Length: 406
Image 1 (cartoon, rainbow, N blue to C red):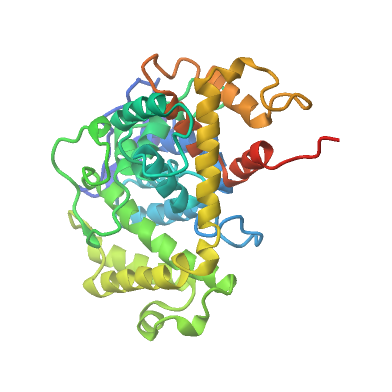
Image 2: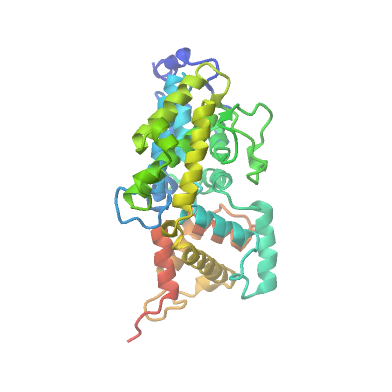
C-alpha cells in the first residue's frame, strides 16, 4: 500500500522529471509512505542547521521589524514557489521543495558579507589574523585551503549537509539524496543566463571546491530552484527596502512597475507565470527574453539602491572585526590547549560561554567527525560559519567588551 501511495503520482510526471534517486551515501530503510525526496524535506527542516537560519541575515542585519526577512523566510519562499512551479511543469515537487529548503543552509552569519569575510580569512587576505604564532598558523591555513580553497555558501552547503548538520542527537550529516545535494551545490548563478538546461555529463560532487568549477544542476528541478532563488530575493528584497524606507515606491523604474507590478506578490507572480509558460514540456527551464531582462534590471536596481545602500552597509566594517577577532581568539583557544583551563580568561565567572559551546561542538556534536590531519582552522571555520548573527555578537561581547570587576 505504501509504495503505491508514494509513487502513483509519478505516472503523471513529465518525461523531463526526476523520478528515482541515484541514492544516498548510506542506505536508509525504505519509508512506507514518503518518497525519498520528501524524506529529504523533513531531514532538512528537522536539522539544527536549518533552524538557525531564522537568526541569519538575508539583507539587513538584526531587523527589529518582524516583517523584514531573515534567511529562513527566504528559503521557505523559494521552496514554496519551487513546489508550485514544479507541479505546473509536471516535475518532481518533492525534489524541487527539498532543494529549495536546503539551498542556503551553508550561509554564514551576516549574510553575504559574512561569506566574503570567511573567504578572505581562508585566503589569508586580512590584516587582523596570524598575529600570534605566525608560522604555525600559516601552515595550518594552508591545510585548510586544500580542503576549502574559498568560501561560497553553496559549495560550503554541501559540507554542511554531508558532514556538519545534525538531526537532534544523531551523528552529524543528513545523508541526503544525490539529487538534492547536487541542487544545493549548484544553485548559485548570478551571472548566468535566465535559460538553464541541466548539465548532462558526469559530475563528482565532492571534487567541486570552487564556484567557477560548479556546473549547472543535473536535474530540471535543480535548474528551477536556481532561477526561482533569484526571483524570490529580487522581489522580497525590494519589498523589505520599501518597508524599511530605504527605497521609495516612486523610485522603482517605470518599465519594472509597468511590466511586473510594484509589490513583491505581484512581481513574483508575473515572473513565475512567465517561467511556467516558457518552460512547459521543454528540456530546459527559462524565462522569456523580456522577463529575463527585467529580472536582471530589477537585481541591478536592488544592487544600487539596496545592497550598496548606507543602511545595508553600515555594519560592514563591524561585521568584519567581529568575525576576524573571534576567529583569531578561537583559533588560539584550540591551538594553545586552553580548552583544559576551566577558568580561561575569566577567573571570576568561569569559562566564557562561547568556549563552553565550542567545547561541546568539538566533543559532542562533532565527535569523531574530524581526523587527526584536519587543521584547527577548519574546526574554527565550521563553528563560526554555523553561528547565528545573535550568537556571534553575544560571543564577541563576552570576550572583547570589558565588564565591571567590582
